[in-house]
Length: 70
Image (cartoon, rainbow, N blue to C red; front, side, top):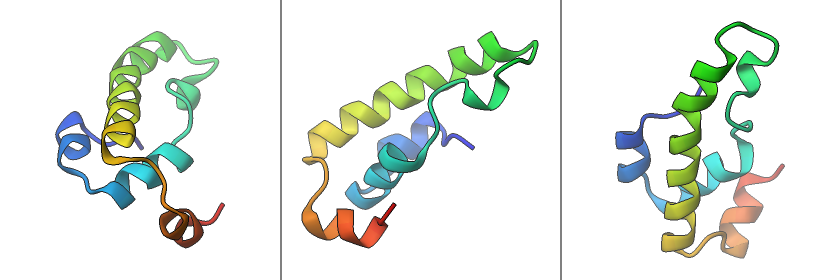
């Protein structure tokens, strides 16, 4: 489940990195469903903001990457 924009804006670096690595692509949860476009439209701005915050905060450190795993 995607976080809210408020949650993304208040998240720390490790949480942003977790979402960056593990959240599915926007709309993935609704592929083949009638509400696909609605889900895509709702999730895309959130993922865009996660990408922005990821860059702002400096992305992964070796320590964060190792702690998150795959």
